[in-house]
Each structure stands twice: as C-alpha cells, then as structure tokens.
Image 1: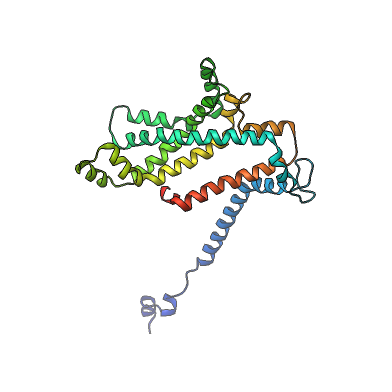
Image 2: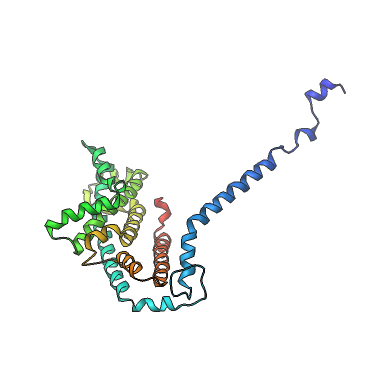
Length: 284
C-alpha cells in the first residue's frame, strides 16, 4: 500500500484513538471542583464555628472549645431578654408577612397585566429599597416617625419592615406572572367571571408558588432585620436581633451562639417545610 493511500485512509485504530486532551479535561474538572469546595468552605466557616462554640464549655466566646456541654442551650428558656425579643419578632414578622402579601400581590398584578404611563418608574420605585442602604432607610424612618409618634410602636416596626420586604414579594410574584399562561384568565372572563372571581379561582392558584416564596422571604427578612428595628424601636420594643446586639455588648458567653444555631435551624426548617408542602422550587 502506498504512502498516499495510507494518508487518505488511516487505519481504524488511528481513527478511533482517544483524544490527547482528555487528561487535561480531567485536571480542569478537578481544579474547578476544588475551587467550588473552597468557596463553600469559606462561606460556611463562620456558621460552622458558631455551631462548635455553642457546644463549648468555655466561659467566654472563644475558639477552639475547651470541652463539650449543652448548658448554653438549657439556659436559653431562662433568658427573659431573648424570650421577649423572640415574641416581638414573631408578632412583627407575622403581621409584616400578611400585610406585604396583601399589598405586594395586587401591585405585581397591576404591573404585569396593565399598561399605563409611568409603569417603569413605579416598578423601579417599588424595587428601590433593595438598592438603598438599610441605615439610610432607618434614619429616614426615624425622622418621619418622630412627629407621628410611631417610634417604639408595633406600627412603626411593621411599616419599616414592609418597606424592606415589599420588593421581594413584588419580584417573586412578577416572576410567576411572567411564566403563566393567560388563556385561562381570558376564558374565565369570556364565560362571565368578574375580576375578583378570576383572580381568586384562576390567577392566584397559578402564581401561588411565587406568592408563597415571597411570603417566606418576607417573614425571614423581617424576623432577622436589625438595623431598622434598632433605630425605630430600640428603647421600646426591641426585637430579637436587637436583644442579641445588646447581649453581645454586655456579655461574652456562648449563649448567643446557641441562640444563633437555633435561629439558623428555624430558618432552614421554614424553607424546607414550605418547599415540601407547596413546591417552592416551582417559583424559582
């Protein structure tokens, strides 16, 4: 066989040989996975340290632990400051979640289904609290609530928390509305359904995952909000995050670490339960 024939028709073994860059691809995958692992480790390291310290027998917040104990968890129910702050935070977060859903879902529906002048400006205004630093918003609320005598009241805390949770409800609801088919709504209107019936029987079930997602985010954000609560109601109705800040200023034991672990577990439990019951992944 001539050399020209070999060049035009290489042997089958040569044609089916493995690419030479395969080992290099494996090396790149290993490096990428290692970087991702280090990134997750960096993000989770503070939480892991808090978990370890919550079981430490050290008298003060320090790492590494000197021993193992559950005393810090057992002492939490007797901490009246924490229990009082927890009660205020639960009341505030529950009220904020209900009110922000009542206000945010119709606002998102209007932005998604209607055309009117200034629509883009209104949507930007609704989402603007996400771009404003919390301390600037808190200072403005204090100056606004002073003459209205709303400082150190539930109404003041709730209004302040609605300002920072409203964009989340609007955003998640808009995402659900953008991915739903409007043909069912149109058919219901043709059959004589009024606006409230169409919304209650057709639209709301379709966008339910987005509404639930927004409500969960609103509850968690309101429950964990510290800056606005510190400015608006620090001396009258301190929420749990404010009580934690006070406790860290005056004490240095690991009780606050035990409380932090319970709050982390509480937030995770809320998200997991809602995801299992309502199918939260559909909203993402």
